[in-house]
Length: 253
Image (cartoon, helix red, strand yellow):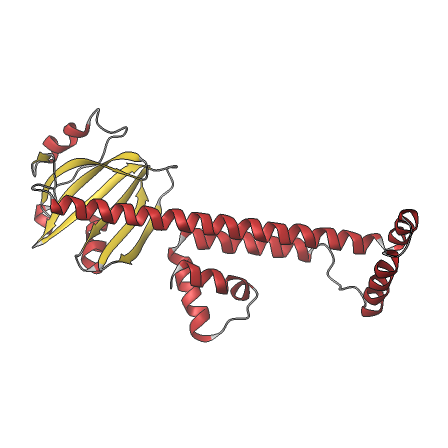
């Protein structure tokens, strides 16, 4: 399930109104998508806050009376308008204010989610473009070696972190070398591995925090992209290699 479809079903999912395949699909998606998972948590907190304002709905008769008073106030002088509004119970005014605040928060969360989704999609496209661009060159690396002790020092002074370089020849993923690239408006390191006839680019740059982020798989234009964070470094592995083999490489890095 894509993020845009998950967004459409998010509110009914939180409210327990989904059933069958839709609920299962949304639940599976938010387990692997950090943005959607965060949005679910925010919606749950917002719903709880609203519920704690007043657990009993206003009586229908009171609602009708308030509406009639507000309509009548439209034809009155400003002073009389203030008088009518003062007669509205403070609890109703408080609930109305919180409802307006919750609507504004909902709009803000939706905008934030859509913005982060667009940024994620743009980053995915940049990663894929960088991978394909490297395959079109005579050589996809600037330092050619399967020796991690040669490749790792090469990055010193060229990137603002110390990449963890591993030769995985014994595991079936020989290291071919490394290079610099430019994605997400920053310079990044890239390690190049081979799996049989397939080339795998592993892009790396400093993560915003030391917290680990579980791997998330995306399929784009026939390529598999796997993103995760570990030990303060963000990784993106991309290849036309089968997803399960790309995931195996991730466990080895």
